[in-house]
Image (cartoon, rainbow, N blue to C red; front, side, top):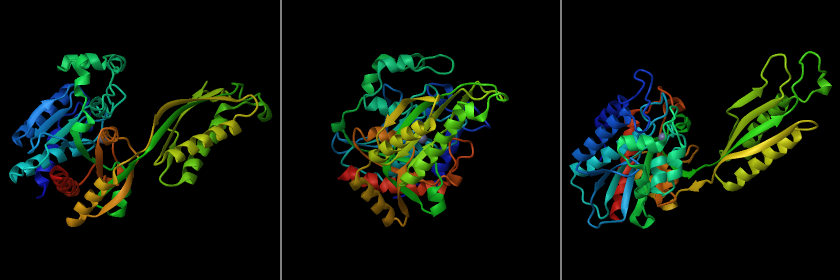
Length: 409
Ligand SMILES: [Zn+2]
């Protein structure tokens, strides 16, 4: 059994039309007209593939194919929202993979022991309301009523208001929750969003670990002075201190190895004038690593660097904004994915996922398999984002074969 490239292409091209920014990439925020159009397309394709279609309380689309027994259920899917001016593949590739698997099973009149649910998750990117991973967090029971009221879009509309207007009563959010005992496994295909697979000429990445993430906001306080009259020996320059910390973040991540990364992605200098010594600098630090020990070492290194950089009058504060532990995906499922690929002559590489995905949240509920297909030039979250349809097909085939085994066993 195999996926059909033409159908994958047709789905990707069709869904790419549902954008708020035609001609400037895919912008498909949740609970918008573009969301409506995309979900109607997905629901229609699911129904055509013989699935029983419903939407859960969060707005995730679920198409179900019954098995010989009522459960536990095997799930496959990804998200169908996008970032602003994103590309046609992020998330959508995994939804399209699920649609195609449903069609192939229908064509071959396959009967499985366990039911299979084909999933199109909502608001994974958090593009509209922030937060993100909304559909999977709702399934895990991790979305509170309070969050629905608190998180607002750029127009000040809360998630709760947007949901209500779209036809999903926010007070029902807990009904989206799934019980671990009702789930057998969750599979996700996603574009790599990095350059590794393409550079290595490998077809499919099998994710071993989804990295842990810590994000801090750092503020360094110095003293704003006249840039012409204050001697170099009498300054408390917050930006010079910050620059040493930025260098340390880069060095710490390099030295940690094992795929660890460290990034200062935002930096604000105050007062911010050419003729004033910087008095205050605020910046972010994002560390990612595959094990908690490395993350802890990186954070310790950051603190040391801050102490060393902030001598004399210089002070600093360090505020944790995010802390997500790494998730190691089950070895047995990875082995099944690799064996399925080998049997089909598809090359694989064991990988880290440096980005969070719905699979990361679902791993708290059930066994998870996550695979990557190559991203051209490693580009994503931009209109240029691209994966060849033939390359996408290989990933879908690996998923198809693996899901069949899990749904039987
Ligand atoms: Zn994504």
